[in-house]
Image (cartoon, rainbow over all chains, first blue to last red; front, side):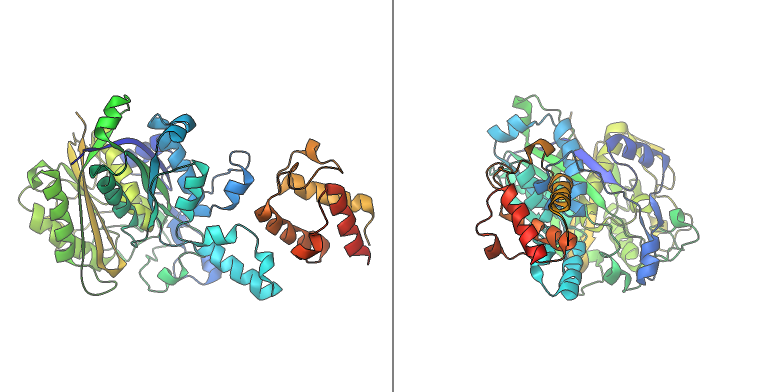
Length: 406
Length: 82
């Protein structure tokens, strides 16, 4: 089996528009959560969200290419440009090599709703315009980026709820491990427009701590009252290790293990057993023991049930070694389809800069989180290997183990 | 009722602003497809823009004989004034 290197990363999120800004926010424990007044007008129970500005791409990207990109595709374009740049990949390289893309995305609501609104009003579908169909599909990101970057390898969107981004990296890793691709652009994207989250809001799972938005997302804290939705995009360039060495690429880290499972049950209720299986598989593939894991980026979204089941599983697996754990969702909110990829970027930045970002707003442990070593403050710490968890609706679980490149 | 100059002004504005065609390309004898690079997907957007600006809907078959920008102005002028 081939080794899989990470040779590039890019990020566009509510805590920063590039790697440097995001690294500084993570270190400082800075929240990107705010209030979106449109959500109040639209009838949301909670107007809280990660605040992510739309990038201005007019004059940067050709109109035809831009028209096909939904909002999350624009985020993904910015993140991927950064990732390709720091992987040392230029258009000539993309022309001369077969590069693939496997990206997580599980909705593209705005274009669907806008098309419906036009059809209702005008009673003529020809007035919907040309971009809507390409923006409406979950694969809008991979369709858009593969045409922008002229990619000729695997071209695939992974829709696996809030584990989409993590599974995308896992599947990209498998393609390279098996020698089927030498380089795959992986990642996850998440729209943040007010049309995209109304049905999730309907479940009553969002925090309503509107008097203090930056204190609303509080994974593992006893006083949490729900998650805060968020979005953006994160890109990871995965590359065959030997290929990366041969071209003198900057190797940032190595994907050591990918584990997955399905809970086999309830659509919205998490499972300690299911998540544990995914973690154990990722560890087994990595060849590392729990004692080798220096940091865990938890999935913990700030919902009482989800956090509790993950805490039970983490304590069962890591209770004897107790590595520092944080949920960066305390700062970013829940980046849903993007989260599994962005949290690899966040954790790898910590690995590069030797610190553990804090689980902000963790003030009062509950019976489960009290058993874990949760980092409520930034910790200076060398990280040689970390585990990142992602779980989603339908019981889909994904875990990744990343190790430092020496 | 719009004058031909008004029609040319409106069309020029949206071709530059929305279809992002370079102003110097917009000559009466420019071929829509070969010179201005307007493809079938761009045309779908032009249908929307024309409806918004001039208040009528283009059907593709109406445009069968429209090949140049000058003929496009003629087409809009005819539709508006008949």
